[in-house]
Length: 278
Image (cartoon, rainbow, N blue to C red):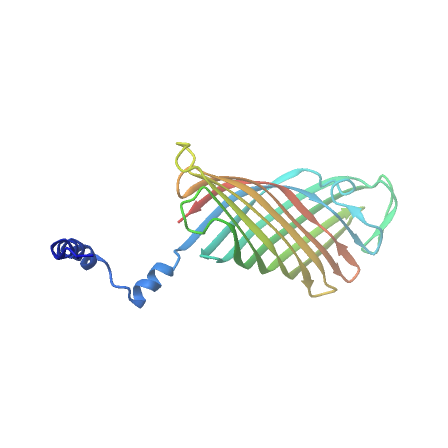
């Protein structure tokens, strides 16, 4: 087969400009392409809490809602922050909750060494502040790839973290005022999942939706110890690339034992807020 030297020379001449414009494959170029952007996600919101669970102090247990009258839904501020890069991230949370109640005892019993009787009037209060920090890793990309403009992405991973709790409970009856308070630290681990659905600009006012869910369990340290567990789940509607409305659910339950005082408060309720990504 004869080679047309003129055609070959012409092809080389046409290809040379494109080759010259192409960036050389250096170590710096490879590192820059491989490095995912550092992202910040800030979520302020209102946690619509209903207090559940019970406590005791040297006697029978009293439920927070039915027997101690703290059955209202009380909104509390809850802020969440996530700093991430590719599969790794650090998640932080802070919230403070307070509620009060009053009524009359339904039966006889003992609280902090004091006897109370059926029909006796009481007033109660409960305050709790929680701060958490956890490290997250999402190595399992089950559908799609991260940091890509694709219709569907699903990733799954685990986390470990720590929780600081400052809690106080009061109960007043018959001229006697009791106060149980303490600070507690918990270590926990769990799993999380993220499902992202991109509208590919088919919905003018909605860029994408994200469903996030996680569950954790761990141990409370200090005093007589205890356990804790929590659940987070929400759906985020991104109206722009960096702003979303959030509707979800949060649950945090602790089981504490401090000498004769025992408590297992459960904070649970809807979580409504907004997410700012940058």
